[in-house]
Image (cartoon, rainbow over all chains, first blue to last red; front, side):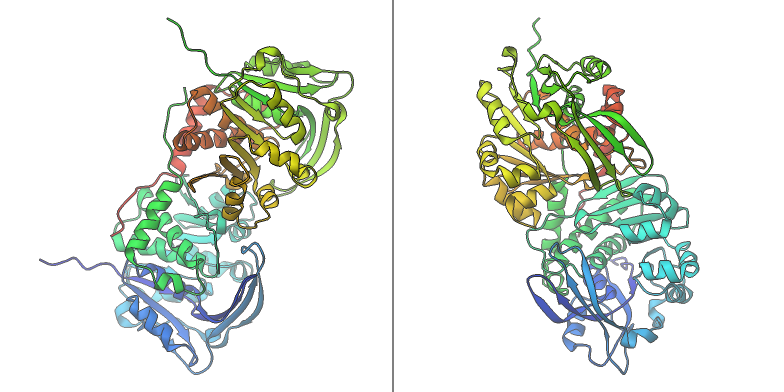
Amino acid sequence: MNTPKRPELLVVGSVAIDWIITPKAVREESVGGSATYFAMAASFFAPTRLVGVVGEDFPAATVDDLKGAGVDLEGLEVVAGKTFRWKGRYHENMNDRTTLETHLNVFEQFEPKLPARYRGSEYLFLANIQPALQRQVFEQLSEPRLVGMDTMNLWINTTRDDLLAVLRKVDVLMVNDEEARQLSGQENLVKAARAILKLGPRNLVIKRGEYGALLFDRDGDIFVAPALPLEEVVDPTGAGDSFAGGFMGYLAGQGVEPSGSTLRTAMICGSVMASFCVEGFSYDRLRDLEIDDVQERFDQFARLTDFSRASLT
Amino acid sequence: MNTPKRPELLVVGSVAIDWIITPKAVREESVGGSATYFAMAASFFAPTRLVGVVGEDFPAATVDDLKGAGVDLEGLEVVAGKTFRWKGRYHENMNDRTTLETHLNVFEQFEPKLPARYRGSEYLFLANIQPALQRQVFEQLSEPRLVGMDTMNLWINTTRDDLLAVLRKVDVLMVNDEEARQLSGQENLVKAARAILKLGPRNLVIKRGEYGALLFDRDGDIFVAPALPLEEVVDPTGAGDSFAGGFMGYLAGQGVEPSGSTLRTAMICGSVMASFCVEGFSYDRLRDLEIDDVQERFDQFARLTDFSRASLT
């Protein structure tokens, strides 16, 4: 009997080495980057391929960790120079942060190059990189079934036209609440969502950190995914990218066309992976998980918002 | 055939005349106060009695509105002088606000006096008033089955011992996230909740405005109630009190002992009434509702967080 081939999920984004300062601890040389977090989370659900660039200083242990998680690294270029480095400090509330240093290093010259076998990838996630580079990825792909993307305030402000061109091609845009307000010019998130959906994406996810995430589709349907109230947040870095990894990974792993129902379950898978991510520095918690841990936390999320649909009268 | 008598719900709190300034509109003489909002929301679910004080300037139309909603006003004292007045301005995000003026007026001398027939009330909500006055209410009640209460930063800072004494007697404490942090000295809300539950209340509701509300019980169970993403927030004043009214009203209307399951449904009834409240100034929206509107929005809340409990593997 032939098992049908599971669809492949491709992520294109940054791979970085962070220096994280929280009110309680410091971690230098904390491997991060959007593609790293995404891949570590997504690989629980679907075969994942990574396109990114690192320097000669990139730790071999991380390459082993990614491979150990089953991530295909043919698309990870290693070039002369140093890996992208970011240094930041989280405030007492563990939600706000201050960037102390950013060194793009080899990431400054990054141009995504897809290995030949990646070109048929059916599921694609464009993590937060320049919109012009996100477009280049589209040009190298044959016919993706589902495309998700992230972006940031910098591109909304400086390369808006490029960004709008990419937005028209994606199925799911994922941004945080501030980015949604900035992109739409609307303070109210429902109005912001409606304006953004008119720009092209079929669905919009608005991430709200410790307050969870919202899903809006073009038909006006809204889903609210809670965040798990956690007693200890060690390092919030990568939560949004882990969310995206769980979300896209679930859809790719199921291999189904995204409907309202599968997108809702994908939102919870994203929330599950984000909740694990913040419990440790770097991708430590994601690396050490078993699929049973993931299922158990999924069930915990189900319990979190469950209530009896009683008649009130 | 005898219909069993429905349990009565008593609220003790402020009745006020507000002057509300939002980025889009101004409403002078906007009748508010915690007990007013609470009673207008609770009366959809259960017979509600109000204890409070107003001055001679209090509008007859509001008395008619409350009576029209079925609220028992025998406990509403009218005394010489002016009603409690508050003036505030909401910021662009409609979440933060600045108090411009507070005139306690007749509320400064308020001492809750329960009419004789109120003393057997089975359900009690102590809205935000001085803890010493909250204690006086207990002394006048025979044996309430369920007691909920609210408080504020002022009492947490200035009359902590009185507050702690009341806390030991209540079934449900409802505060906002900042008050929970202040009362517990813990920044993290899960730790804050655990610390507060040790002070006495059997259950804790933490209100988070546009982000919904959390329910914590002593067994460590957590429920997350979403807020309805609204396109237009006219006036957030009274949202928390309307939440409390829907929450307590549902429990009283059902007449059941509060279990994990009924408390969860009560959280949604609270969220429903809060979502209506902010759609208009004062209690305008609450006054104009039919029970079918309430049921319809309850069903909308059910849809908001509903997802398929799939197996992930």
